[in-house]
Image (cartoon, rainbow, N blue to C red; front, side, top):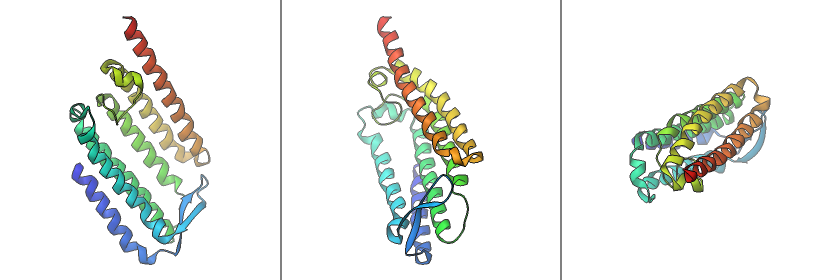
Length: 209
């Protein structure tokens, strides 16, 4: 899976380079919930900003297992970690392909691409959450989860369930694209805050035991 992520990155760069001469001088790079263009950029920035973001993120994700003080714990879920990184690169590759296609004249609603892609990514985060171990970079990091393996595990078990539900909700947003933004951010904020409070609750319960 580690190799797959780098292969995806190379494919994105090569595909962008091939398409670049056919792109308009000013590209559509951002789209509203109605699928209409609401952000433009010159072709050089518009075509290559996402591939370079992918490169930086991949370098960071490659470094994390080496620099985390709790890197021994990351080794325990390294296959899931590598799969997530590859899936994240695939997500960005899909978004890049969508942007290039739109600017080559293929008109379609980006919500039909973005929402299922985000939903699948979030769902997989939910799948791997219970398998993660305590570390400083990945997962639900609160003062209480970082301080206790038990709190970490309980919080990520609940988080796994909630993120899978959230992933399904986001993917189903394709049937109501007008409400896509609140469908993504409102449940995400509720889940995030709920897990912070839950981690404190479990920590407090453990402290009383």
